[in-house]
Length: 87
Image 1 (spheres, rainbow, N blue to C red):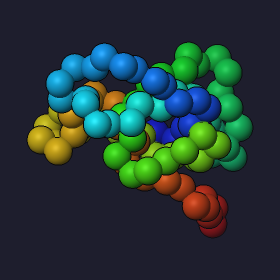
Image 2: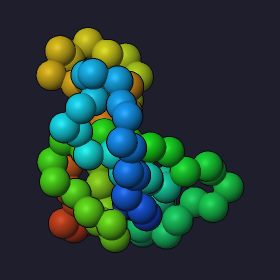
Image 3: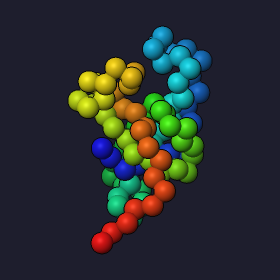
Image 4: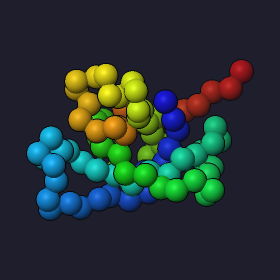
């Protein structure tokens, strides 16, 4: 899984059938202190939890998403992060 920040919404009037009704968001990777990692490109992810612009989110992609029949995208937002605690 990966930490990211939602930076924009995507409006797509035409989508693959399995994405109809799904909300697409543009995300950018962040470090453990929620600082944007500007050396990485932005990505588009399917929102599964009701995230919005400005939220710090947990993103899952690749193999673990591919094996879950509930996930219809290879990159999905699976959590909204409230806090990160270091010990």
